[in-house]
Length: 477
Image (cartoon, rainbow, N blue to C red; front, side, top):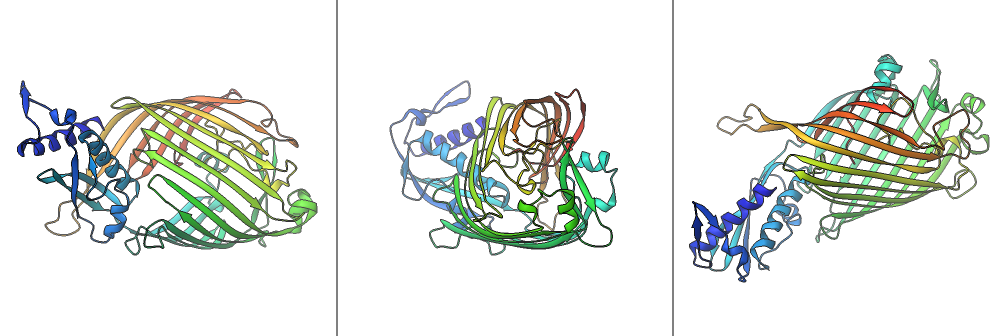
């Protein structure tokens, strides 16, 4: 980042010097950037876009924090050019983006924005264990193929050139499921409002019906399906500026389980029911001001959500969740990170169906991958010191003759980390992890490759006296 800032400053300064706007001075062959201290203002001229064969110009210009005709000092313009490049990369539309001064006309500087578009269409075969993490599947489930979903999914990004996303999935195996979603980031001419539609329906022969000794307990029926579900939702999104996005959602959920599940756990749903159908409403806000969303090394991010599921005795749940992430560079290749999460579910008396807390999805404590902690309130604090060990590129064959081949960057990081967490559960049952502080720590290797693919190898130690090697594909935030 510092090298890029120097590059932008020197380039702009040389352009200015060549047109007698500032004096060029050199000492030992180094340019003294007197434009940085000049009181003269620089006017943004034309913004010339190149490389976007599919992506609409308006989508790119939406991410650039300056417009034609605006005036800035050199320092401010350099920062905005850096921010423009960072925002373009964080759209996940491009494998590379360069924002630079093109030429100068009087006191006006024309800006060049050159991008390299990614591959957008990915028909992907599906072979995915259903367990919460790979260690649980490999060790506790002995890599059972009965606990694997297989099938095909279609990932189609930038369908119309407006950064929209289409997802279609047909899955068999552990879960038979048909899913569809379409996320249109912008539906208005001012590029502020968007909309997302999602639908999924499926069934399972196995259900996690309880938690005993801090581990999920399952029931399976090889002759029939014991769970059927259908989910549908619509979200309206609002993105007034660049870094913050608001979402307003409404959905409908239908869940039904076999009577056997209710006999095994009468509190699975409320009042011993074997079926619930309920609407839900939600609001969420997410803020990103980081250098690279898939693996941030600098900057801040935050997420807040509130939702209401059900409006009667069968389903009555308020949820409030908040996340925060901060990364502080310590050197060009090292940074310190802080990751926080907290949540509460009201009222506290909830059926088992609503009690999942830590150990599910991306809300977990490193070192406790073999356990889950159910409850209605709690959170965690994670810290890490990370240093980049290695960085290189893998050259890919040229798609067309005469076209320059792309290079896939690979970066390898080493880290040490520590976690602390707590979950409150007024009805813990035969579980020992709720209602007490949990601690863990360890060291690991993170591999960042192929656009935004991140894999984490971690050796963790927890407050139960256990340790082990764990593999994750989860994102940091």
